[in-house]
Length: 147
Image (cartoon, rainbow, N blue to C red; front, side):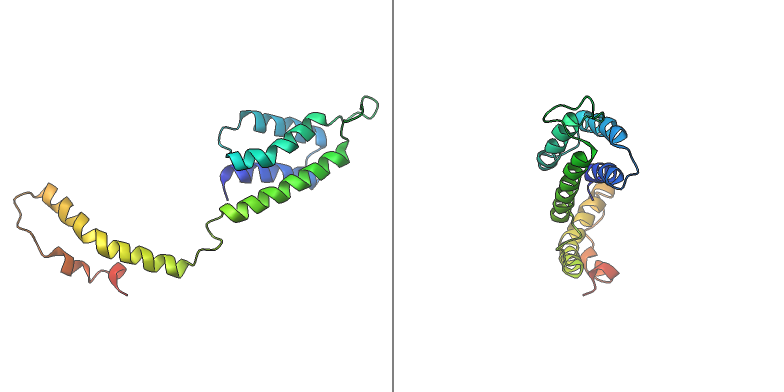
């Protein structure tokens, strides 16, 4: 999970689960949102409506005006945002949709093709007078090159 998504997700979930009061959530969310430079454009699109909901939140019923939100309305907005963050994380999560066995085969083939040449070049830099050695054949015995 993207660490920024994780931070927002934990904060929002804490509020929804009543681990934070609405007033605590308001202060922490505004602080995080205003100073977060790591969020992506996709995250901004998801988090911005909650920012405005937090801006419209008024904890005191006597001071609440038309258009202001109470704690329940803020919680509903937070739930919507949390769901969208989780959906974004599902899309962005490399653990979803990648066959690790297929990835291992691709990486193994890349190493088989690239590593011998890379090592030859490195050896030439370290020992420029050394004759060209048949390094590729020796590398085939390494476990990474076994099919």
